[in-house]
Length: 263
Image (cartoon, rainbow, N blue to C red):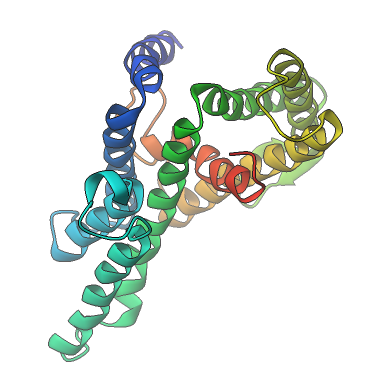
């Protein structure tokens, strides 16, 4: 527990100023986090990230995260996905060069790894471009869900939510997480009434969706780790595991918030 607290304090001391500054600082940080996320996926699968597919996968994630209008001004402002698709074309093209020694099956993993890490952290950058309060709102929703699910599940949890994937999670805990997220969202919306275009009732409905999506993102990460038979996605954060362990819910919540027009 002591190690977890120390790591959390140090991580927040580094991340919060970057989040406050925004701009290039958060863009580079998000790109680095996406790259580490790809590395962790390769590590779990037992692949070398310092390989042609590993380097291309990280490059693809970075292309998705860094805003084209700032980092690739010689291209159209919406070129991020085209640059990513260039990486996809190269990976698929290797099947031709290798005469199908390297096939589409092998190419699919680095492509999915890039999308998973890249799109999630891309939307963190987009949210921050709308203001720091928007990012804090998303973090509060996820943290409230996690804390509520843990506390309620520990107290009254009896019915397993998805035992084949995450045996400790319960239905009662999941509902407690949703309720906690709604309470926090209502307080946040009341304090920041000018932040959202949606009314309070709509935001409550959206928050329920975000909480469910965040919990599902957590389960997806658990499924990946169970598939590869690893406890944590990495060890970059002592006591907490890897970057994907800490951002698994965020990688799902930020894109859905964007899709719903919250930012």
